[in-house]
Image 1: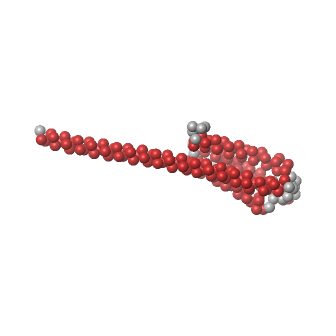
Image 2: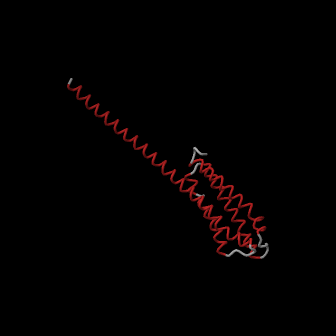
Length: 174
């Protein structure tokens, strides 16, 4: 009977230790998953902020160029470079990090923004060259007819990306 009690005590201690170990392991796994989910959410929020900031910078940096053209003046090289750099920064903000952290729909929307940035730049550069060469009038109408379609397409692509981000970051409000 004493041997059975000893075996029972050892078996009980072993089972208790095993249960405690499994409980600790499960708790650590849950904590790690929660920590990772929090990190992903924080990174998505940070990336969303970068995309919004970069898009706003396009308007801020494109406006002086637009205002110069509306006044019938050539934009300065600094204004041109600032506008082109802003477009590149938005494309950069929408590239790898968004694809890595986002859902497949967010990644597709981000790639669309990058594509629209590329198209806008492809239209902006020849427009500026034509203004400098004197082959295009320096007027608001020339700006609008040549660039507004790509500006609007870029805006629409950015809005789709923002809507997708909001759907992930604020699911109850989407």
